[in-house]
Figure (cartoon, rainbow, N blue to C red):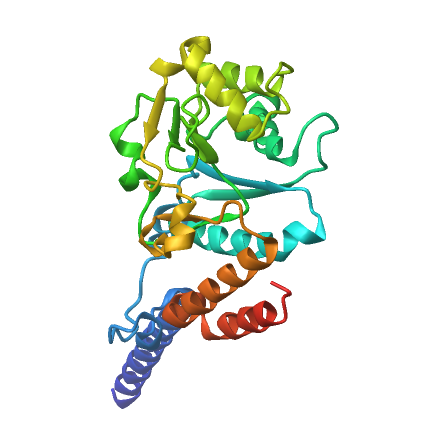
Length: 315
């Protein structure tokens, strides 16, 4: 009788031990399978202390989404000469920062001068190029915004949409006037220092026509601006129905503002008809002020490096 009782107790102990081992192994497997997907309080910053989370919750397709592609491209161009680079490097930096803030794309075209016309015609070449030549690369943009390399965005908290674009979605060509810069009524309708172009069939035809122009106004003062003014006066391609002309200070400047020191009121500062040295110094001082005011956005390390390059005329 004693032997039977001892045997039964031994079987019971073996069964208990086996049950414990199975439970222990199962628990260990669960710990290993969840360890790589555990949130730590130090990672999340919300005091959460690492409860197991299902792996599906970390699917990249559901938790990380790419920003939508930009619908507006800001364009600049210059000939790459040392004289132009003295100030263009500054305006490129400023305008690139503006584009980044508002999620616009930004591109600088460094191009050789055209044989039969002045450097001012490079902007028409660029706009013709993005509208007509490389459709596969640039065809997804809704708007192109041209800005001269002696101009830059001054008020970085203002978007192009809120400044004027969203109010005139039906227009293909949006530009500022030149009335207060030029007394000639036949040549002061628009200033081409800044141009906003909507992607459309009409825009493609207009800028191809302008680019291919070879008439009597080709070498007149103000160059491509004179030709565009003449096209508007004659209403070529029904341009007047596709055009919106704004006051010069809406997204450009007037020359007298440089003399009167009122440029700081503008959305865009355009240092037209000034020397490379003046442009360089004006933009340099603007960037240094910007870095001091926005070092928390730019980053202190980048701030210091950029300031050093600017002071050494390497930015």
